[in-house]
Length: 457
Image (cartoon, rainbow, N blue to C red; front, side, top):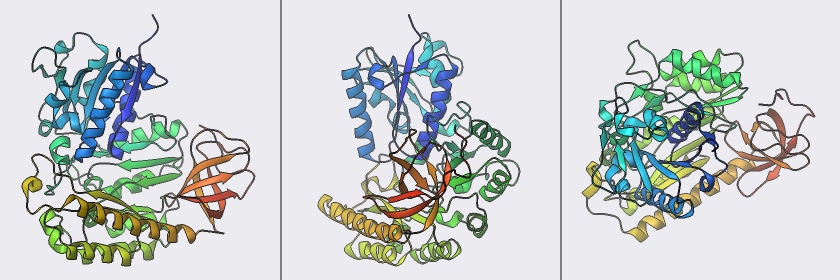
C-alpha cells in the first residue's frame, strides 16, 4: 500500500488560512502525502469558520459533499465552528472526529494514530455510539500561542504568517473570542525564525495576520508592540515586501502608518474595520471609537500614503439599526478615501450579547442595505483603479508559470493585475505599466524585459 494522502479545505479569515498552511506542513512532517484533490484523498481536513450562520452552513454542506463523493475518506473537522459546536458536527454522517481550536496543534497526531483516546494531553469525549470522537476543551485554558508546524506557505505564493491569535475585546455581536480565546502573541524571536524559514524558501512577500493583530505583544512579558515587530522584520535584508492584515482603528498608531509610508518594503495597504458609521450603533456594538475618529484616521492614511489601498469591514442590519443609522454609514464611506469594502449582513451568534436584541431588522431591508454598500464599494474601487491607468506600479506575480499569455499578479496596493508578456513566473516582484481595466482589476504589461527580483521559488 502507498502512503496515506491528505487534503485540507479552508474556510474563513486569513488566520484560518495560516492555520491551514501550518496543518499542511504538519501532515507532510508526519508522513502523509499531499492529495491531488479532496475527492481522491484518504484524510480530508475541513478547517471551518463560524463568524456567521452562513459560514456554519457552508461547512456542513462541504462535510456532506466530501462524504458523498469520497465515502471512504477519514473526515476531520477543525477550526472555529468545531470549537463552538463540536457535538453538532460530530452527529453529521461521515465525520470521523472533531478537533476544536483548543487541540488544533494535536490534530495531525490524532489523524495519523488509530488509538486516539491515549494521545497525551488530549481530552477525548464521545457523546454516544455512532457519533464522531471529539477533541475539545475550553479555549480560555490556552495561555500562549503554540506553533502547529513551521510555515510552508501552504502552496501559496504569498504566505500568511499568524503572529497573534484570540481577542480580549468583547464586541456585542462577535463569537470569535469564545472560539479563539483571549489574545496571545508569538514571541518576536519565534516570528523572526519563521520569517527566515520562509525567506529560505525564496518567498518575496509575507503577510502578518492575527485575530486581533493590533494587540500583538500585550500578553508578552517584555514591553513590545506590532510597530516594534514590524521594525525588526524590516531589517531582514532578504525580505522584499511585508503586508499587514486587519488592524483595529484605535491600534493604528501614527508610528505604524509612518512605517508603511516610509519603508519601500511595506505594502501600501491598510485594512481598518469600521462596522458602522453610526455612533449609536457603534456604542451598541461595543466598538471603542467614534465615526469622527475613524474618518480622521483614514484621511491621515490617505495623506501619508496617497496611493494606498484602504479597506474596511462593514456590517448591515445590526439589531435596532434604523434608516438614519444606515445613512450615517453610507455618508461616512462616501466621504472617506476607501478603495474596497467587505460587507456582511448581521448574523445572530449563539452566546453573544446581541443574540436576542430587538427589534431585529427585516431580512429584505438587510439585503437592500447590503446591496447599497456593495454598490458604493464597487464605484469607489472603480475610481481607485482608474487612477492608475498609464502609471507604473509594483506587483508580485501569482499562480502558475505562463509564457505568452496573461499572468496573475497583485499590486502593492491590493489590486488584481493581469500581465501580458513572456516568461511570467510566480513569485516575481516587478514593475508593470498599467494599460487598462479588467472586470475586477487592472491590465498591464512589463516595463522591463528582466525584473529587479526574478529568482524563482
